[in-house]
Image (cartoon, rainbow, N blue to C red; front, side):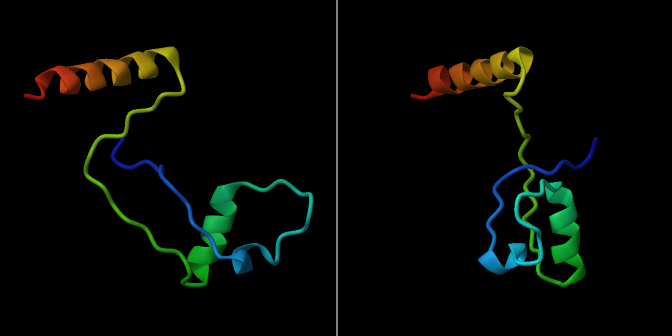
Length: 73
C-alpha cells in the first residue's frame, strides 16, 4: 500500500448544506463532492501511520513509544 487516508478533517458549515438531515453518508462521498467543486485540500506526510484500532496495532505503537522514551538523553 502506498497511500492511505488518515488524519483530521476540517470543514466549513457550507460543506454540509446539501446533505439531507438524519441520513448517514460515507465521508468519501463528501470528499468527492468537495473535490469536484475545487474545495478540497490535502497535506501529504511522509511518516508512517500507526493504526491503534487492533490489539496488534496498539502493541506495535506502544513498543515504538517505549523505544523513543528510553532513547531520549
